[in-house]
Amino acid sequence: MSSYRGVLIAALLCLPAATQEFRATLQGRITDPGGGVIVTAAVVLRNVDTNETMHAKTGADGLYTFALVKPGGYEVRAEKAGFKTLVRRGLTLQVAQQAELNLTLALGALAETVTVTDEAPLLDTANADRGGVLDEQFIKEMPLNGRNPFMLSMLVPGVNYNGSQAYQRPFDNGAIADWGISGGANRSNEFLMDGVPNNAQAGGNNIAYVPPVDSVQEFKIQTNAYDAQYGKTSGGVVNVVLKSGTNKVHGTVYEFARRNAWDANSFQNNARGAEKDGHFQDQYGVQLDGPVRIPKLYNGRNRTFFLMNYEGYREATPQPLVLSVPAKEMRNGDFSKLLDGRGRQVTIYDPATGFQNTAINRWDRVPFPGNVIPGDRINPISKKIASYFPDPNTTTASTNYAQSNYFLSGGNSLARDTFYNFVVKIDQNLGEKHRFFFRHASNDRTEDRSVNGVRDRPGQDGQHPLKRINDAYVVD
Image (cartoon, rainbow, N blue to C red):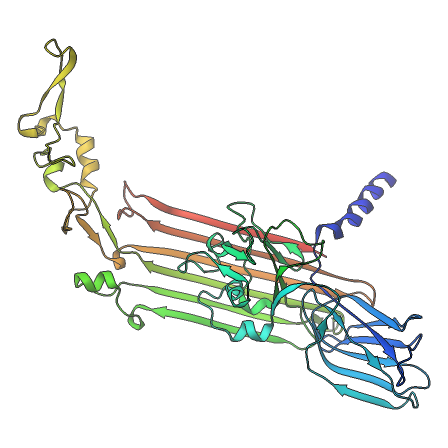
């Protein structure tokens, strides 16, 4: 049994090496009015949303440090006998930030308190990272087609999106990974979520899981000169942090909808005088976060917090098609109009008339008269298969015979998508020095799309269906 315990302990000790840090560090020096350092000053860092606290004391150099601090809003309290207590409020620590906050204590009684509210951003002086942070307020207020938070990365200098403008939905895992950051190779970036790699196992460095907008606290695009803890990239790092619950319950219910009656007609339909296509889209969900409280059993205020976000998505997208189908006479064996690219007739030979042509020394066959296959020679199974092709309904200028002769309006050729997105996160504060969180995230995309205009019968081609599934489990 002891050997098993040893293996378990070794495995647990190795876990931190698998993550890149998303939490912040706050450090600084505490001095007196004359600039001298204050030794053994007591410093308390408090999260204003969860009331979690961290304690530190200044060393011989007057320095204090708080490491592994969750991004969020904080206040700092510093005190030392012979000096007035100083409370600094309005501080915000961001993802992967290494901030510096120097404090000066005024002479006076410890019972006296000086409170300073300063909402100016803290300077990040401890590393040479370059990039930009997109915070919760910015993410919530910016319009997002498809509600994919990663697309806001385009607003950071040095970040270029090289993918299709049509595929930016939260399940377009390949197109939305087409980023070039600070001149690095395209599709060579590291995607992190809560410090854990979020790159897909399939495709060209695809994004695996795209969280709903309402579950994202903030994210940082690290464009260059980042720490050695970040790897597996020759471009940049996209470092996303999901929300943690607070002592107050917050929630959102939302629905984003599009309907055919609200849309303009497409260019293709207008050109042919066709009606608007039957497009619709619904993106809806519910988000809730707060403390875990079980009446008469457990009160998780200041200790246990949760986040839950469910999002559903359904869409039918018109895809007008101009296709090539056999002409009606072809289905009856008449190929008299069939020509090659030089305008010469394509000869149809009778396979039952093979003979050795001694004049030209080759095996030869006799053409069907008039290039028409007799009706009694057509296999009934083949004739049935040919009947599944739709009839030609249009002609396209400058095309050959039986080419581009079938137009299918978008309303009759819909690409249908159904998708769900779910994430749940539990944060537990065991004490000042021990915390952990668990997160599960999953989504499932199902696409049904025809590429040849044939649906619900033999001969259909396309995505029937295409599935994309992601599951992620994280313990930290």
